[in-house]
Length: 433
Image 1 (cartoon, rainbow, N blue to C red):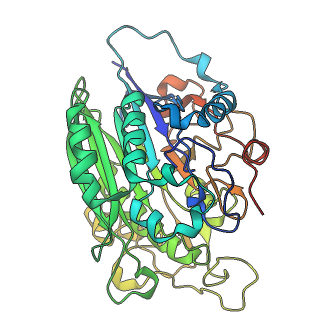
Image 2: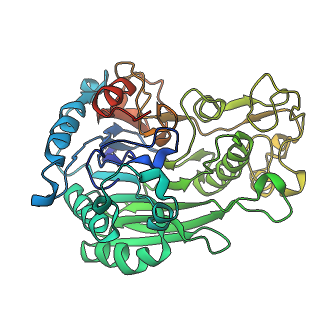
Image 3: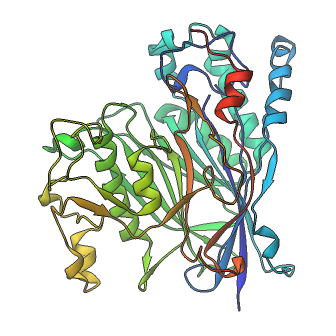
C-alpha cells in the first residue's frame, strides 16, 4: 500500500528577527547586516525508500506581534507579504486524489536566528539599525512569537547560543509540545545548531552529530558542526526521514574549507541514511554560505566536482596554486565518493573506495526548493554580501524525480512561497553605499 506523507517545509531567510527594515544597511559587511522573518512552506510528494510518500509545502508568514513603538514596521510587513506569494509546482496537479488518514502533513523551518553575542561584538554591522530592534529581550520575544505562529512540526535553527538554548528555546519549544536536540560548536564557541520536532507527530529514531574540526588537519581547523536526526512518523514508524541541520564556514575566501566540510557531512549522511541498498528521504537545511552560482552548489545538485585543477582556496579556474589530486588527507578514510571507508567495507563495496582521484562525487542527488525548475526562474536572495544573494537553503533528495508520476517519487516539491528576488530587495530595501 502506498502512503503519502506531507511535509510543509518552512525556511527563514536571514535578514533581524525584528521584522523591520533598518533605516540603512552597512553595505560592505556580511549577511548579518539585517534580518527579516519569513517562512517558506514547501510541499513535496515522495514515495519513500519503499513506497511511502512525503509532501513538502512551502508557506510563509512574515509577522510577529507589534506594539506602538514598532508602527514603522507595518509598511515593511505589507511589502514583504506582497512579495512573498504562493507558487505551485508545475507538476503538482498530477497527484492523485488522496484518501483521508493516509497522509501526514508536517512543516520544517530552517532559520539562522543570529547569535546575540555576534551581534553585540560586531556593532559596526548594525550601525544603521534601530538600536531597540537589536536588544535581545525584543528579538527573543519576536522570535518566539514567530515560532509559535508558524506551528512548524520540525524546526532547524542555526546560531543558537548555548545559554539561550537552555534558558529560552528549549523551555519554549517544550511548552509547545516539541522535543529538542542541540549541538554546540567545538572549542566552546558560543553557538550551535538546534533541531526541534513535535512529539505528537514524530519519534526520534536516531541522533548523530558531526564535529568538522579535525586536529592536525589544516583544511578542517574550523569549529562548524552538523546535527542529523532520523525521525519516524508516529502513524507509520517504518517510513523514516533524515533531517540535516548545519551551518558551514562563512569566510568567502575559503571555498576549500566549505568543500572539505561538505565532504565530511555528505559521508556522514551517507552512513546515517543508508538503508538496504538505498537511502532514506533526506531534507538538508541550513546556512551553507555558498551561492547558487558556486562550484559547491553545483557539486551538491549535480553530484560531481572535478577539483584537481582548481585554485586551492577559492576553487576557481584561474589560480596559480592548484589543489592537485589529493584533497582531504587520506588518513580520514573518506573516499572521493564522500563515503566512509568502513561503510563501504560493510556494504561489500570496497571497489568504490577511491582516493586522490582529482574528482569528488556523491550519491545523494539534492534539489533546492529555491532553485527548482518547477517554478519561474528568478535570482532569489536571503542575505546581503556586497550584493543580494542566496546562502540559506532547504535541499531535498530527489531520488525518483525523473518519474512521470509524482506520487511515486521520494520527494516532490508541490508548492512554495517565493523568496524575494535580488531585484525585489534592491527596490524595497536599498542599501546605503
